[in-house]
Length: 187
Ligand code: HEC
Figure (tube, rainbow, N blue to C red):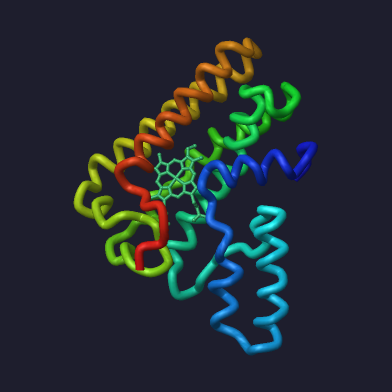
């Protein structure tokens, strides 16, 4: 990542309730020596709050797909939040890059990651998603609308307007998480 201070990214991810315990999880599936090494890595990871291992599980493709997607959302949205809060210096070019990437992410069909039968496994996606698919899809679409506005508003450069729109997009994240994302892994 090119932005100054991976720390902005990591702090923001921590705030977004990103889970860093994957290293420990993976450690249970391998030999003792690698386990020790990974345990050490996990400690370091926790201390630095850096997600060291990406999670892509061949046996849980949809789950991994959607979690990777949300990680990308957070990696681009988080620094924008930090910037409008004054926790990071304003860099207009980076703000536009993040906003553009968020708009680009909106074009992916994320519902592929929520196919029927993918409600179990390593996931914090609540079963209510599959019972209220229409509402869930609507909440995803409203995020996309907010992110499209965010791209426009960011390009225009008015900092107050950008901050306001970051807030609106953040509300769209939260509206869905409140109903459909569990605090901890469910299964
Ligand atoms: C329509 C619903 C919805 C919206 C909108 C949404 N999320 Fe999520 N998000 C989820 C669900 C469901 C999960 C849990 C996925 C899982 O564990 O399988 C999740 C997981 C995450 C995770 C954890 C990913 C991981 O590594 O497992 C992060 C970070 C995240 N979301 C950030 C965001 C941000 C930032 C936004 C807004 C820019 C956002 N989300 C918008 C539903 C949503």
